[in-house]
Image (cartoon, rainbow, N blue to C red):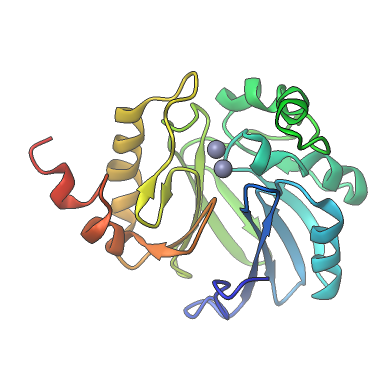
Length: 230
Ligand SMILES: [Zn+2]
Ligand SMILES: [Zn+2]
């Protein structure tokens, strides 16, 4: 648990969340649950399955799904293990990231993160899809650029978005991988994320939280000032 975990979703008291950094890459796995039903999801469980399951147990949360923003090892590596333990479905990312989900074990061997397993989602996500957790509805927007099948999952009244490796506090996702596309990433951020409003807080795949408004002010890559004249 880290100090960046919001104490609650201020505008939405029916949800609770803890952010648990996992793997040597300090990837943020989110445990989000409904206080009404105590059903919860892991968003981007990248590794350290035992620790994640212990956290769910500690808070008395029954895991009903894994939600994935994209197919990279450090975000999806523990998805299959959690499905095997809980029987829950794996939902997301967009189908265009399946080639990455098929390559997790090979990547893990290369980078010394050997507990990752390949992933076959039970359902892919696409632009405009919704996800349900208790009474709460989350929305999905397709944000390619870092990977072709990257999605962002957000909760409107709680003003909280899970953006994976699209956007960070002060930075943006890498696009130097095969199939990465810098301009597509910029377009995803400015056309799909900024319209959600400046007060939308976000949990990035790595590092501290921020808001879209803060990044429009100060992010060296995608602030309104930096993009002026583009
Ligand atoms: Zn990534
Ligand atoms: Zn990452």
